[in-house]
Length: 132
Image (cartoon, rainbow, N blue to C red; front, top):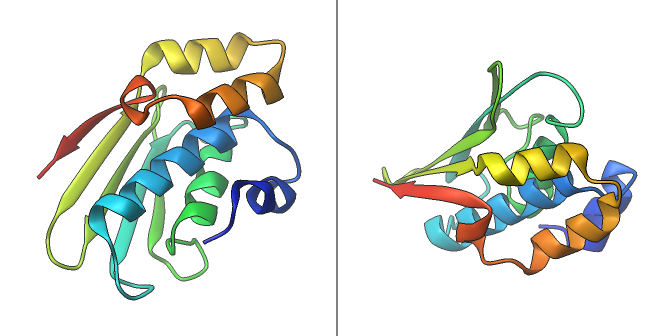
């Protein structure tokens, strides 16, 4: 996993959608605790346009789930962002970005400042979480 600073370098800039994805990935990594690189997979549901898809880079940087290995899948939706993580053991974790977080991120003028705020907020203020 990369540090958030490394994720910013990988992605090319700092922004709230990268931060959202990074936080989601961090939480999934901690909750599902995969032992090997293919012990967790992720399905991201998102509009297929920037800035929404920046979430994917955050998830890839915070987990062992990558498009290249095939354990990240992107499914298009009209609005909203959610991620479903599955562990090899059968545990499932669904996180849906709160609408007010998305709305603020889409309209904020200080993207880097909001990204840093998202890194500090409790995860439950960013996403709704369901575990199975």
